[in-house]
Length: 328
Image (cartoon, rainbow, N blue to C red; front, side, top):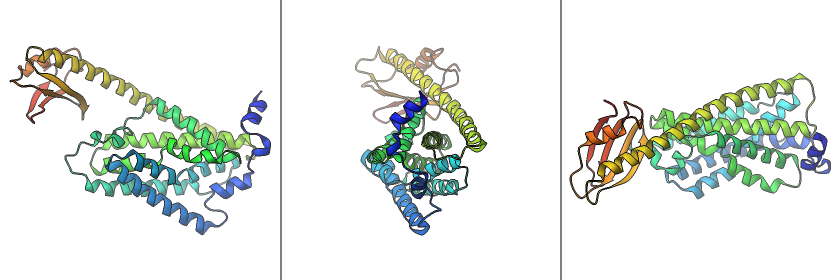
């Protein structure tokens, strides 16, 4: 059964040899100088492009950075080296590449005003709260990339894999958020990158072992166990993040309902937006008259959101009211 599936997904006459894979994925073999020059040049350029795309909230620019980013090469090199039980130095290239991209993001953060709301940027907000579905998508994309590398006839899908797996943009977001002192947001983006990295390594190991590039023995099994433990750890983090995201959506929905009821006696008043940011519930309202007492809003929120959460009411005219904390 397993053999039939392997032959269906990885036909023997289309499989690339271990030598061909090593030539493509090992930056320490073959024409080393040219390989490394191309790697660092394209990685730096992709980091700069991604930083520009993130700060301007340009999806097209970020996609361009994803396509030319070469970081998946040494990551897949780690998988190949683990299966072949040899040291390729790919891990060092990954770590150095991560440091370079994060540094570019940190430098780019100097152009961001100190009072800028990072979560108002869709490119940042979409990469700082990963969930379990992100891990599932990364794993599927990792297998797609590994199969494309292992087969001679499907290399055309690699640009799509580069877009789907998203390695450089999360690292740029790590640098931007860290440069602004938003360490929790930076951690969220870093977790997204690590989950994508592990998905690529795990998928690569499975596929490369399936086409017979390994040497057998206990080395690959230990590597699988290590990656599995790391996967479990990242899965716990992503599960916690998913739970937190669900709770935040629930609390903001309840706050919207409570604020709508709070404004119901004021003709023409309405709730414009409700957001949870920096552990504070922010309620934006539009009103042609004076607002009702904010104490009534805090009373309505008691039991609907956790006690102690600060609530801030802002009008569309720019008036800001520190309502206080729920339950106090």
